[in-house]
Length: 378
Image (cartoon, rainbow, N blue to C red; front, top):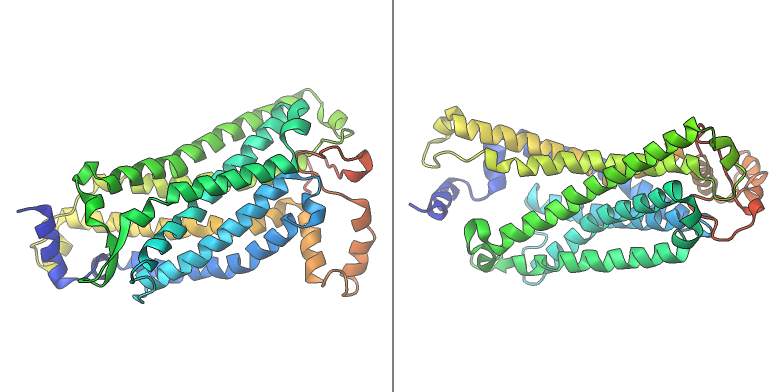
């Protein structure tokens, strides 16, 4: 008997995979309903604030990394909005995109911010590598205009990479569900869907975090070498000094590495947990070793996946913890641009004297650059 017939028999009792999980692995679906709303609450507040600050004239004026971080905030915000629709559809059972065209369009758009967020972290990580390890190239390669061009390219590349999803997914009128197109499943392990999913996931969520980790290691080694040579104090007088901002970028990229790797590794382990005999009764399935191992794995995987979604909503807190100037901008916005007393008065005494530089001053004068020691936060 074929595998397809086997799976169809299982669905006689349970109409969907989510229904099976709710019966045999309830912790996974429960986590999918409880944890994401926390990320939505944090991300829907933090990401817009981050985007406004990073893309504001004062931050992006001489700060090429602000372009990447501003775009990252927008990309993460878009993903959280789409993920909210996905959770409502999958976890809560409402038909959000079970319709012609909408099915294809949703999955096409849904993957764009996932790819883009990862590529943007790679972009500013590579830029930070140039700024720290090759400081004489910063003025040439780490400019606001070049950063804007790279972000535009990454957006187009993410759209191109995600466009295949509009073919992979389709609406099935007989079943009234959005599902993988039968033509994309031809060939089983060598099907277009399987090959494309593995190649793109390994590229975006496996290889890219590895490259980011490699660049971070090189940056940390260079910082340690500079510290041993006692060059930090001498570099403070240079207009291109921005060692404290390196802490922010390293924290963001390491956070991405941890979350992406955790989820990607669990996805890669799925072939180690085959499903058991689907003709068993519910009681027998609960007692079967193969089924028990599979459902335990699926529970752990789902919980880890929803926890790892935090990187789409929590960068704001990294910026606040590691960025003194970013915190000032947050307070400035919270005080209605200085219209409230006390905090507004405190900020107005220093805002006009400080300009923030993360990678390159792009030709700005010494008085226009705000520099700090690596041992302090921004």
